[in-house]
Length: 432
Image (cartoon, rainbow, N blue to C red; front, side, top):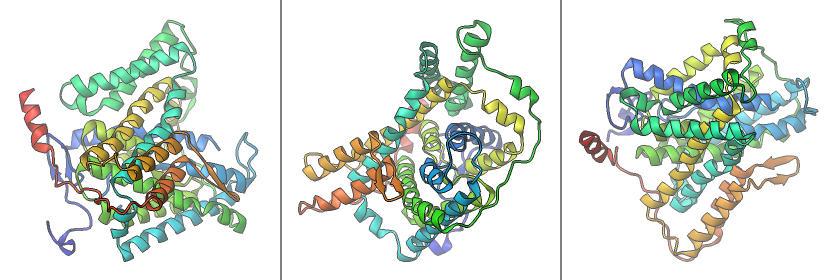
């Protein structure tokens, strides 16, 4: 491996056409564009829902609307819960402040180093935190397919479609299970409702009425000390979320991403500042897109450059936004069950790869409590600040592990060699 001083800041993506695609590799232009679009589709459910409810190219992740801000934004702005938030500008100042705090934490990690991460988050803690991300989001996914019998069966059909495409589809199609599975679920729902009249049909009227091109609405921040004090601490939650996501990606890619933790935090913080400055929500890394990578085995960071460009362009198209809003909740729920479940399974993979000994009470109790807190979405209220289930579980896991010391040192999280299982994957592909 080259010394850090000889490694360029941005990767020079090497062309690769088969097998596992690493973060510093890329597919040909056509598949790259298609897979970049798939990541846009994967993030749309949550990044659209959050607004409605109110890193140097080394780490593959997608930043979108964070739900961690919703409660404190409502409190800071005095939002009544219906209609547009007339006092949104006040909350924006707090979102920007959270981004500043987040970026400063990232700078501190870059200056001090990341060695303390292994001491705070050994494999039992890391696996628990990663699994909690999927478990915490599971109720949202299940609720999406629980509205009626038809929606439940549509959601199940979407899940089956994603699985069949991921396992049996030929060529490039196998790399697009979320996108193609979503299309299959959408068409099935349209046939059942718009054609057969079995449920609420999809209304395409807003799509026809929407303009092809239009400017988004921007809102300027209004500086307010109370809002800043209330919202800025959300940066701690964002650090916990980003850390868990990076650990998940590291486990899937077999890459040591710890050296990029500081840069990832800084990038997320700057993105939050930019979003708040224009009237958007604070942002966080997305488990949905990590789930897509787990299915496709393609981790090229170039995909996220494509996804970002596509998302920006589509942001200027009201017609596309109207089309996205027609996606049935049952279809989004089915897709979410798949991607959230994959994140949960990745946490278990971390335990297995690092041979975590659950005969040790320290490990067993830490994992058990963390999973239950995260799955149950236990929130801690500290004055006007609320720490959500993922944040509570993350910091709880760290604190409990340190509290339950038993005199034995835990080995740090294993850092697998470059593409540790590639040979096996390629041999399996050859047999097929």
